[in-house]
Image (cartoon, rainbow, N blue to C red; front, side, top):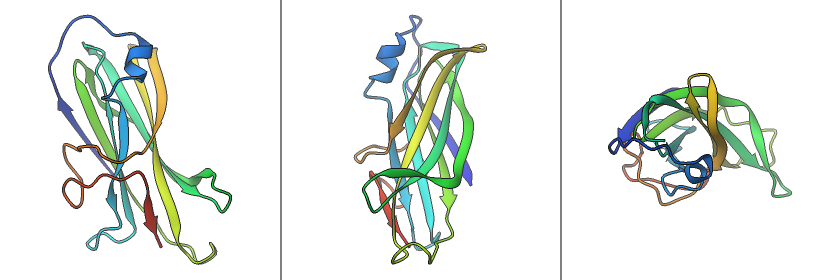
Length: 160
């Protein structure tokens, strides 16, 4: 598993509300790596979160994989979570990512899985949580680094 972080944007002084942070267009998640030839069975999840405009505040992301069951429910893929990863200060928009390498199972139907990511986000001021939420992966986002192939962005990934 590998983590990636990056920043984009500048700093301002007023902190937006928790509601504004959680409804920002800068809050998103995407699959940016899906079983590439050089890294078979690898899935990369990338997220973006807006800054709260206070450089001293900290932002964190946790990355998780989920699979789609036969009854069309998303269920956590056991042991496929990163735990919270610091992605930087709150002064600007931040991106972070995590790569998972899976071991396909022959016990699941035809051995094929549809997988998505779920990114949990948290803004902190010292030990105080300012806002938190979860974002499922969607397509059409621009990762700063890590996409394979470059520019790749999907809501889910089929593997196995």
